[in-house]
Amino acid sequence: MASASERFSLKDELFNAEKVSYLSGLLEAGTPGFDGAAFQREVMTQLLSLELKDRIRWIADVLARHLPHDFPAAAGAIEASLPPPLDPTLTDDDFGDFIFAPFGQYVAQQGLDDIDRALACLRELTMRFSMEDSIRTFLRSDEDKTLATLDRWAHDDNYHVRRLVSEGTRPRLPWSGRLSLPEDKVMALLDRLHRDPTRYVTRSVANHLNDIAKENPAAVLAALGRWRAEGAQGDRELQWITRHSLRTLIKAGHRETLDFLGYPADPPVDVTLSLETETVTIGEALMFSVELTARAATGLIVDYVVGFRKANGTLSPKTFKLKSFEMEAGETVTLSKTHRLRGDASTYKLHPGAHDVAVQINGARGEPLSFELV
Image: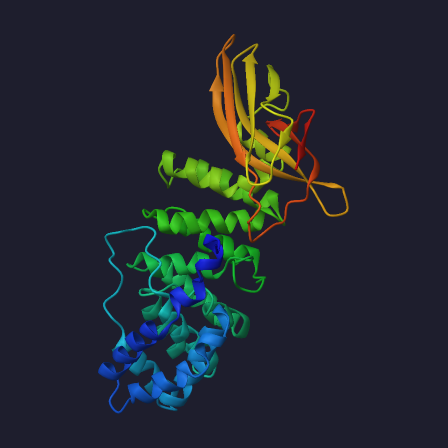
């Protein structure tokens, strides 16, 4: 029997004949003379043989042969074909329909000689589907003009446009190439956007800071400290932004980050790690518990670190979140965890043999306990 990962195909879910027909219908309704049937036929000659990002590029290539050759006219045709903007009352998790990604790819390919018109089109498009990948082409081509436009967009009435300012300038955007921009200009944008009332925007800001933290932790801590002092964002939301921004540094036990968050380097707590079994079968779960007894009141960030056996027999540690909480003097807390060790994962391969698990508290890792994976 096929596994769930084998049965589900993201590329076929997002880009298929039905989606192409939908796109074609929009273009036919909004573009005089557009031959929707011919567009569909040409797209489908190759679409299903391509991988996901290649499908986006292919549809954009076909668009170039069916839209007006004059870019401003083509941009106008795209805009006239668009459905209404995404619901502005949702304020979060409304990414839009991937089938509009080829429009952004087309604009990035065809609009470099008319950047003002191209950016205006991307603004319309991002209210239907995030143009975070496409905007990066213009940041690389004309950094100053594009950043000036993004500076205006940081004040836009539509939160999808504001989110694009942060998401499009991320140095390590998933599914896109690395991007290096002047730190002072980017931080000026994030200084504005961290105040945003919508989680969709502030999540992007936090993800952006998490990207920066991998290269420049000091800059991230400085920004968060500045925002804390300014008080322009609500305390609860700023606390969320802070934790989400620092998640990689917290997992890494970065001392300056833990100090910033107020977690002591050597907390007054006694720790006992216990394994339910010392042998785990691939596909089943590692089960363990951690007993903590506080000798004095303290704050704790408790993670666990699994040492995964590599093909060459060495162990590669991976850190996982367990719990963050406060303890009173004399209090005892027991944390239990079930960590499934999947044998059918598509992103990693398990190797039988000796593994280990350890508890990490406020960045300090304790002695590991070994278990055998069979």
